[in-house]
Amino acid sequence: MSCISATEDLNGAAAVVTGGTRGIGLGIAEYLAERGASLAVVWHRHEAAARAAEERLASRMRTGRRLLLLQGDAGDPAVVAAHHARVRAELGAVAVLVNNAGIMLPEVFEKVSATLWEETLRTNLSSAFCWSREVIPGMKEKGFGRIVSIASIAARGGGVIGPHYAASKAGMLGLTRYGARELGRFGITLNAIAPAFIEDAGIFVGYSAEQKAELATRTATGRLGRVADVVRAFAYLLDSPFVTGVCLDVNGGAFMI
Ligand SMILES: NC(=O)c1ccc[n+]([C@@H]2O[C@H](COP(=O)([O-])OP(=O)(O)OC[C@H]3O[C@@H](n4cnc5c(N)ncnc54)[C@H](OP(=O)(O)O)[C@@H]3O)[C@@H](O)[C@H]2O)c1
Picture (tube, rainbow, N blue to C red):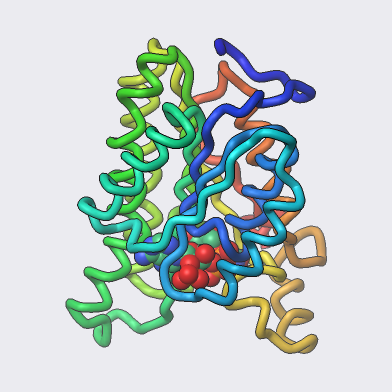
């Protein structure tokens, strides 16, 4: 496969979405299922969400495609190696990797403990490195690969969660740019998406109508983002072989406010 067009069936090509059982990751996994991928989604702590996602994804898979749910810490290199071995054996070499698993635990600078720092860097950044390192050899063999990492507006302007979160997300952009330089000649693109204020994902799901209305005033569009807005950006990157090393900002123009 040298190129995927917007209408093309992914024909059972293997895709991995870390954190694909909730929020943004689930939205992207659903899109990949509908496009005809075989799918592995990684989850960590929330079994009920994983079971609900499994049912939802199973109903969207095309005939003959495989769906795997993999439980474990995507930031642990040994877990990632074991998960990847299973994906290779059962779905084949990975064509599409979405580095989405993430935690967002707010804390002010001087109160960020060594534990919080390490856990955030491991979950958000090391997971992207470990999974990318695993799948790159198979992508090179195929002469095709798409690696998309879900960063954050915090990678650009610092954000409001804390230094641990901002550093983890900014690190994803460096990883993306370096990988894009080294791997472009093998047909592999690496890109990032930097969302902000996605109201149907993560911490924003629990916000009240008043809190959401206040947040919306921080965008130029006057509304919050939705998972579907991020999926649209992902679809563009999936279908764009000449776009690599970029970060798409999906934030309703929040930079200008
Ligand atoms: N929501 C937003 O507005 C927003 C804005 C900017 C950036 N982002 C980024 O977008 C990504 C997705 O965010 P979201 O809001 O959709 O989050 P979410 O709803 O909280 O979902 C997070 C997903 O990541 C998984 N996960 C967490 N830690 C993991 C680990 N160590 N190993 C494997 N999987 C793990 C979770 O699995 P379990 O549930 O099983 O733990 C869950 O499936 C994150 O990287 C986040 O930083 C989100």
